[in-house]
Length: 119
Image (cartoon, one colour):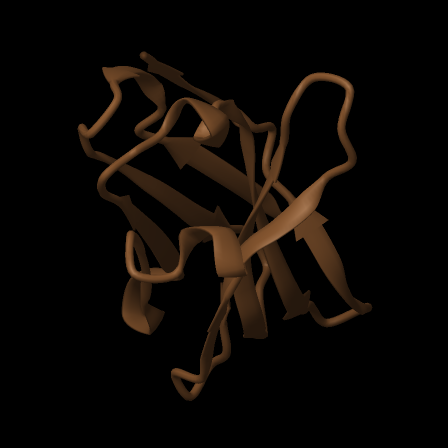
């Protein structure tokens, strides 16, 4: 059984920073892409940033220059450093990992962590 556990959300003032972490555990054979999505109230879930197993990165235009994604393959962990936060960054942030177990290859999701940016 695979689990993705996130941490690091919270309340911060505009202009502040937060760092999210997500660790995958369980019977994992290989992790391909890891990433972060977010969903604000009344909006669809959107990709924030993704990183492949070899370090290829992509960002949503809205976070370029402010957010940094990284991963530690030895720890099956992905990070999201969020700087210069804006109220419009307020959302539930979800970790995602495309990974292979012995039985299947598919995306897995974390439970979500709330990020609230006050103005």
